[in-house]
Image 1 (cartoon, rainbow, N blue to C red):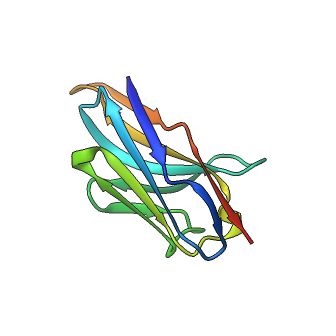
Image 2: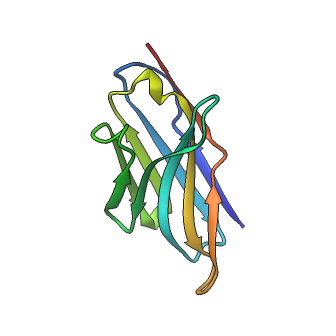
Length: 120
């Protein structure tokens, strides 16, 4: 079993910044992919950013140049630095990981979600 604890969400004005953190713990042998999704009211959950290894990153077009994903493998923690926030970034942000619980068993884990609200 794995637990993902997110923090850092909140209310910010347009143009402001927030930093999300997500710490994973539990039966984790090795984490391969860490990332963030978001879901706005009435919309489907969408990928925001992923990071594989230390620095192979992928971003949604809507956040490129504004958001930066990073990870600390020693702490099993992933971060999302969000700058130049826009009202359309308002959503619940979910952390997720692809990991192995042992040498052979791949699994996925999801955080509980943290609300980000950007006011205009």
